[in-house]
Length: 158
Image (cartoon, rainbow, N blue to C red; front, side, top):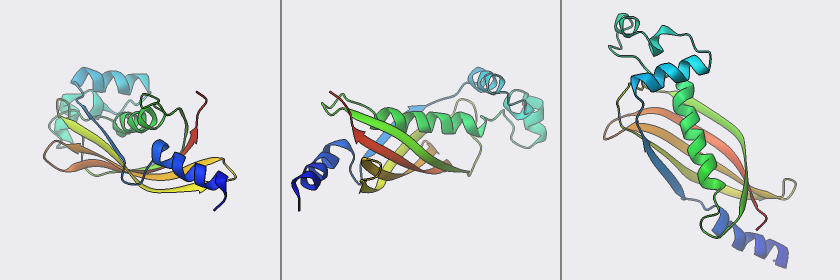
């Protein structure tokens, strides 16, 4: 094994590892949901009109899918671009896919979590390609959103 690859192999342990996880808990209020929908141009009444949500059999307004996935992407971007552990990183989020399994209601406690499934060196891109699996789950219940992403993590400048 050449020295460069050995050094890169050692660096991956510090930058990103298979099995590594990150997690955050969040809760949207009715006001958060309505404001996010308004800011992003989502005029679906399910995000601000309780009567419309009741007619749709939800019973309560629901967060737009993009609101939950934005929080999920923010978590993964923050975690894998951090330097608080003494390792400078650069991160590019290359791809994300999400599936919506259940509505997210106001005042639910959601747990957002990502887990690194695979990591491999990509010489062309000069960094580690990682596939991550994520989910937003109502605490002690079912997943509302599941996702998969591809990240490029590179050593940053100190």
